[in-house]
Length: 223
Image 1 (tube, rainbow, N blue to C red):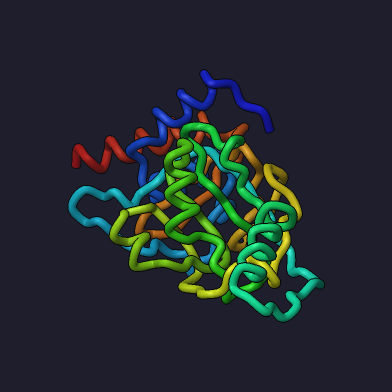
Image 2 (image 1 turned 120 degrees about the vertical axis):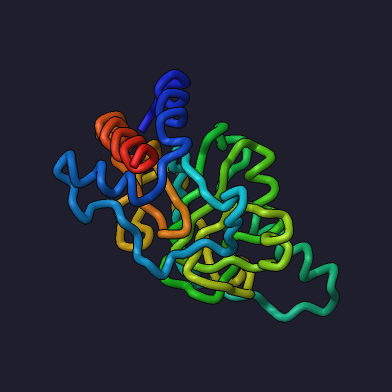
């Protein structure tokens, strides 16, 4: 789904301070009850209860991985292994592509049910943030979690994982519709995540949902 810079800016501005619960109520108001709420097992890796830096909102940038039917041969040297690993990342499991990340994106990864593979680590996640991403969400796991927490990279995952993609997974697509946490996610949909979990708002409903959610939040703040 293609969105203009102006569309993205307006959406990001409206959703900037909204909580997942505000957005959920907004979804109810436009007839989308129980739509877009990811599985409760997808949770923040860390929480900042003072500055709320763990909260994210942004535009979905989707990546889908699939289990590979290839395995690594044995390696005589560490150099051979490193070369093979680099080739796998560059040819079979590259994603998301940093050059395609836009400011305000949230990386959303379908892990294909592979639980113990680290889709999000300290090195690649910092690269995504440097390219303009606001955080990452996956129905799989994250690794290098000590560093991710220390660096305060907003990550929402099903848990901690340890393996790497080479020998386990291949990228199937980037910026195509995926399933994550039981929710249909398209590139361009709006992602909001906080301590209550993750919600996905269909882009065509984003303005209507935001208007209601803002009114609800303003009412709560004034009560």
